[in-house]
Each structure stands twice: as structure tokens, then as C-alpha cells.
Amino acid sequence: MRKILSMIFFIAGGLSIAAAGLYGCFLSFQVVFSVFPAWFAYLSLLFFPFVYGIAPFYAGLAYGDWTLFFISYLGVIPGGILFYLGSIISEDN
Image 1 (cartoon, helix red, strand yellow):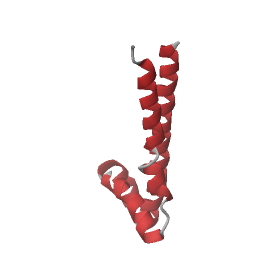
Image 2 (image 1 turned 120 degrees about the vertical axis):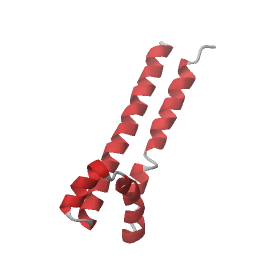
Image 3 (image 1 turned 120 degrees about the horizontal axis):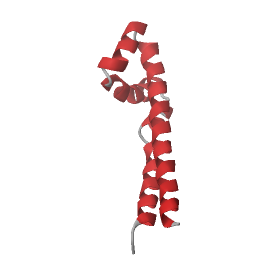
């Protein structure tokens, strides 16, 4: 029973982190697409991924909208908490 419960927490944590990462990448692409030309936005998706790491800070400082930062960088905290709970449950006493 403990193994099943811990797997539920691990799967929920993984889905949470994946969803935050994908949605953050999508929103970062929209920011990059609005700032740079379309060819650079598509090219940076493959060759310049650091642009997507900087995009949340740019959106927060330039536009005053910190939502992308919260989704991209702080969105992994609930997934980490779920992973932590799953590891506590799966420990043998």
C-alpha cells in the first residue's frame, strides 16, 4: 500500500514539474516572439535556449508582469514537495 501511495505522489510531482516547465516554455516563447523577429524566435528554440531562461526576468522587469517567473521558476516547488512526500512514504522503517 505504501508503494502505491508513494508512486501516486511521484507521478503527481512529475506531472506538476512537467506542466510548469512546458507552460513556462510556451509563455517564454511568446515573450521572445514579441521581442525578436519570428526567425530568431524559432531559431532560438533550438540553438539559443538561454534566451528562454532570461525571458521570465525580462517580462518581469520590462513589463512588470512576474507571472512567467512564478510559473517557470517557482512552479517546480509543488512538484518537489510531492516528490519529497513520496520519498518519505516509501522509506522503510
